[in-house]
Image 1: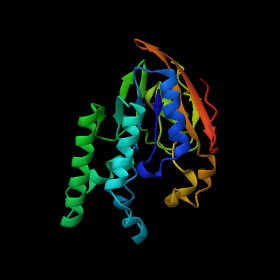
Image 2: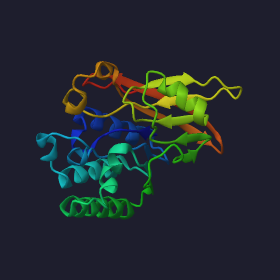
Image 3: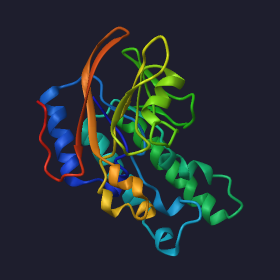
Image 4: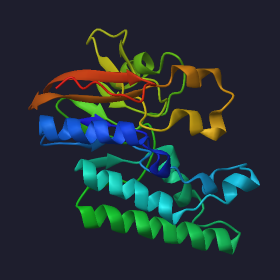
Length: 231
């Protein structure tokens, strides 16, 4: 089972309850979070004074509470998770110290929960599970599912918050699954005027794998608060 983009304190409680319930019913051996398990709004570049005042520690605590409650076994770094790491060597010592403490919190939390953690974000970082690359993703456009599949073959990713399944135009017929977001979409203030937010959607993926073969199903919930689960 896989989820992505829960964004710490910005997680939607309806989405959270739904995916935890789905996990309890499906009982998967492997649960992957494909990144952005925290939001780290205060570390955002070119942010407003309001965003700079957003608490850091409660956001990380909330992110880890969700990982624990969902029983996540694997987690990839997303671009929001990476934000504190970028500032560890900042010239502003206050910022560098805050970033260092945040990173200690993240690394310690992953170790405490026994989660396999990829602590870098790039176009070369993923878990290979069941013949699919489980990654955060990095391409941000209307054809992200197709483009990730064409770049990487079979893959599952988040990043764009828009659930989708698309085939890559290659002779190995790869599939790209975009598994959406679990946030309170209307409260993502940094994107409040982007038309693409109207296409964002709650989602998760579940299925079975044996060796390098997988059968996966994408379940999306659009932007509704009430979730109807497939199991």
